[in-house]
Length: 127
Image (cartoon, rainbow, N blue to C red; front, top):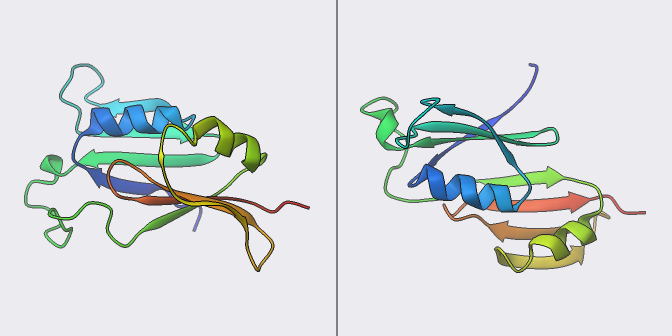
């Protein structure tokens, strides 16, 4: 195995891209390359890559993917540096599910929910 990149299914790609840009992600690829009817996009922040795809683009492929519920049972665990500064930068722009706290295993973490119902936990192993 070489890497893992998440591909989430979303209701509105444009709104999802705008949300992730608030978190410091950059749009690096999209399909189609031009036009407003996006069906797929890739966003990157450092070494974290998230792909987003419209439910409509699936057609009848992959029938096991739930098209009725957003977010599912998935949590993204994202490690970063300077977590406290990052928290202050985004806290008023997102829905905070769990505020900054030190865990029993020594990480400082906080959790947000994105506009599609996915949970993102940001973590740093502070000294």
